[in-house]
Image 1 (cartoon, helix red, strand yellow):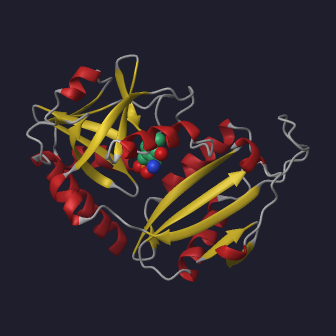
Image 2: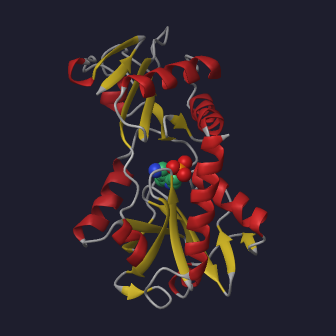
Length: 283
Ligand code: PMP
């Protein structure tokens, strides 16, 4: 596939960065993953806004204006073979003075994008839902930033894999935060419940779409703190992300969620999401 590294499009296999890059040494950078349907990026403006928020918070000057990002992203989409892609974009603080933690002066960021085929959940997972485990959320207190420092997320996701599961649902101080690489929403008595955005979770682009769709279609919903026990006794639990879209979690820690199959509200939301995608992509 074709990637972009500091101004140059090239085969991914040929791309090279220095081992002194602070992205490599410290995980000092921010990133985004943008889904592309029929060669058109979905919710690009929102992804670029979230990138700007991350870079601003980590004091890394944004190397490109939105129109420039858009140009690079569209070119990487055009240069790769798939109609549906997931575009990965990262900006690191570049090379510094060896392992000095302090920021280099000046900062010369490393800008890297690559793309792969977008693989959304297979029909079997949509029909049966997926299994999840839970864990204590031991990440830092800036989970609102899409930082490339993902060691905690890697450990938490691997915990799910080791148990034959797909995702880890995280609780902090007795409340739901999110998944290791997704947001979590639940349904109780026909009402969709979503945790409020805070420093404890990533403000998901898909999470926003799901709330917009609930409002648009008159599905009752509340954005409020969700107790761990409310998740464990929910009628439905879903994970949402740009690549998983809306996916029902049907077992949590080996126990059935609701009746153990994807619930009716999950099915409706999944269909609304597909319709919305198709409408946006055709407009
Ligand atoms: N939370 C975390 C920790 C994530 O890594 C992700 C993205 N994979 C999400 C939530 C979902 O965000 P989005 O809907 O923007 O993909």
